[in-house]
Image 1 (cartoon, one colour):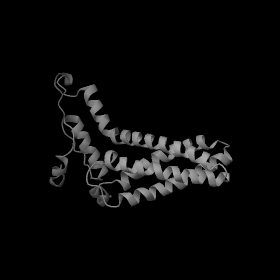
Image 2 (image 1 turned 60 degrees about the vertical axis):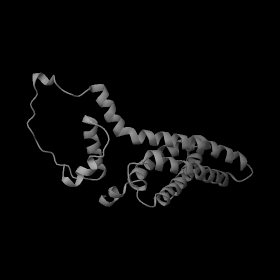
Image 3 (image 1 turned 120 degrees about the vertical axis):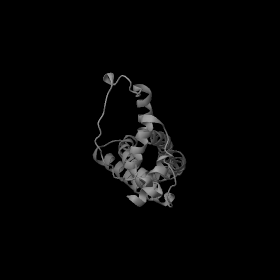
Length: 199
C-alpha cells in the first residue's frame, strides 16, 4: 500500500478479511492501480490453522460489498411506494383531462414529491461515504428530470404498443430505470470529492 493511501485506509471499517475487502473496494472506486505480486504460500497441515470463518467472514464481506445497494434498494422501495400511490391519486384527480396529459402530469407530480424524500435519504443514509462533492442537489435533479422523462415516455410507449395498463407499464419502466439510476447516483451524483477528481 503506497504511503499516499495509508492514512485513508486506516479509516476504513472492518477487521480481518472484511478490512481487506474494504481496501479493494476503495481502490476500485478510486480507480487506484492494483499490482499483483506473486508470493510463496505455505500451508501447514492442509491449512488447518486458517483464520477464515466461512459464515461470519463471508457475511461481513457480502454485507460490505452489497451494503450500499441494499440501503439504496430500501430507499428506492419506500420512494417507489410514495411515487406509485401519488401517481394513482393524481390519475384519479385529473380524470377529466386527456389521457396523455393526465399520465404526464401524474408522473411529474408524483416524482417531484417522492424525489424530495429520496434525495434526503440517499444523501444522508445511503451514499454518505465521506466528503460529498458540491452540487449534489443539482446533479440529483438533473438525473431526476431525465429519469422522469424516460419514465413518462416509457409508460406511454408501453401503453400504446404493448397495450399494458398504466400501473404495470410504470412498474416495468421504473424497474429498469432503478438499476441505471443506482450506478449514476453512486458514480456521479453522490461520488466523494476525491473519487470524482481521480475519475
